[in-house]
Image (cartoon, rainbow, N blue to C red; front, side, top):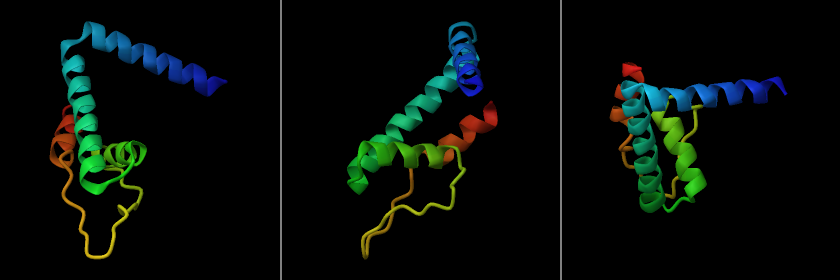
Length: 94
């Protein structure tokens, strides 16, 4: 229960930040845009489901990695993600 309360407070703070702080609004918009671009990129380019594409976009954007390699077929290399460099800039500016 405490976890849900904490998540609700975090969400409420983020919504308040988007409404009141133009810098936070710009950063949230940039992160959201990068997630959409990355998800569409992986879904179209790698023929992954939207869930897999979104998961990999979040993992790539946050540079957490989890040691996960994208699934590849024989002879197929994964193209560089459009979210790598811009994502690093978004997180470093926060």
